[in-house]
Structure formats: C-alpha cells, structure tokens
Length: 178
Image 1 (cartoon, helix red, strand yellow):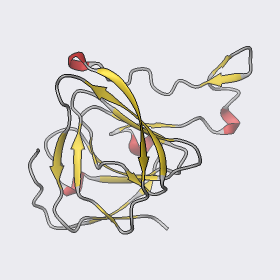
Image 2 (cartoon, rainbow, N blue to C red):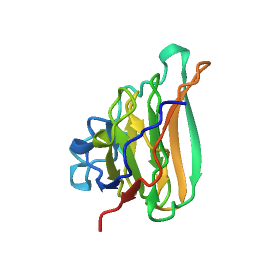
Image 3 (spheres, rainbow, N blue to C red):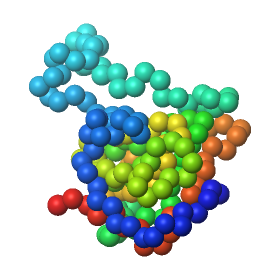
C-alpha cells in the first residue's frame, strides 16, 4: 500500500474525454468519426470491414509479464461520485473499453511519479463509446462506471504484483458536467 494523501478534501469537475486532454496519461481508444472512415484504417476481409489500429504497443510484457484480457461487469456508481483511492501499474498499462450499448465512465488520473498531489489530479468522462489506454505508471482511480454494464479490461499479469495503491482522504468528490 502506498502513502496516504493528507491534503484537504476537494471537489473535482470532470471534462469530456478528448485525445489532446488525455494525452499526458495515455490514449483514447475510439474509431475515427464516421466521415473519416474511408480515409482512415485499412480495408480487410475482401473489403467488408475496415481495421483501425488504435495502439501499436500496449506495454504489457515488462519483467516477464503477459497480456490478460478480462471482462468487468460494473455497477453504476452512486452519485455523488466519492473518490477513495488512486492506483498505478508501473510495469504495464491498463485499458478499459465499454462493451455493448454505450457505457459512460469517469476517469480520475495523475501523471506517473510519486503519490500525486491534489493539483495533479485530472478528471474526464467517456461518452460511452470511448475506451482508454492508461500508460504505465499513470495514477488512476479504479473503474468509475456511470452506466452499469460490461467493460473489457486489458492489463499485464506477471509473477511480480504490479499495483500500488494510494488512499485518498475522506470527502473527495467528482462533479460531473451538465
């Protein structure tokens, strides 16, 4: 378990999830806009599908690790969204991708490094069709599902456990836009 934060309680406001805003923490995983489909991606399966490469290296094999794909069936979190902890995986990345109908989720993240200070935390909301790839070492709150349902989780597994947890002080709340 990592160090506990001792800063006073805070209220964060989430912003929409965009490539540019999320870049310091990882990548947004989504198909290009419909208008760009013909120009983007690669035609496959005799022209019956287009392949869009979203990430060339998922960073999952450090220290003998291997990629693991799992399904998380998440409950919608009650409002207000109370933040309890952040965690990081230094040896590998972690991805969350909503499955089925659009499933919105919130992200609270901070850059790699020592336990984050409140000013370093950023919050985003997926539109329900976007997934994320969290770069190795990025601090993040465990999955904050706004809509109940299934999420594909891709992460590293290995002999060495790769999850450092940092508790947040009581009273931290995430405000959602709108």
